[in-house]
Image (cartoon, rainbow, N blue to C red):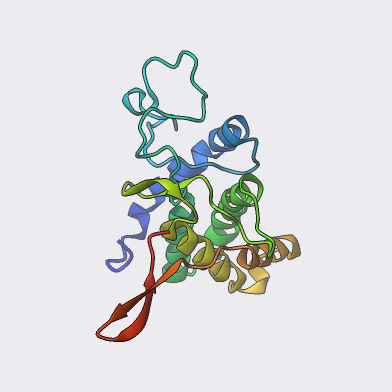
Length: 201
């Protein structure tokens, strides 16, 4: 859509998330005692899980634990939305969109990560529990898709023109950039040489 100049076709997606933001913020508080927006991966037009994923019989179950394990600890959807919104701003240069829509959503989504997860001795977020999309779902820490988003999005927000952001926003985005986890890496020997590559988590 961006390459084709179909910017208007992206707005219904952003409208949906904006409309559901109060609900996503209430969910973050109820599910994880956190501030900001918790955006679930797949949702109905009302922002809820579908019943077949959340579970029809919820008796004795914690509200933050859907029956569908594929979405139980997926966190990358919030940073993905912000990356799309940043792309939209980069292509259109729409300052009003940036100030009125992108920045409030960015503060809300990033605040969730800042208040939801513990931090290590260096002040970096530890994504635990988590999962790597639908591939690795147990024993995972710092899944690469979410870590990549938490590195990219605050860095791009920090690079926005100063005239678009408030001092409080700039301070918060710099804080989030500093507390992003490092991209998980592994080493392997290939044809007698040690190579480093990105790990799933």
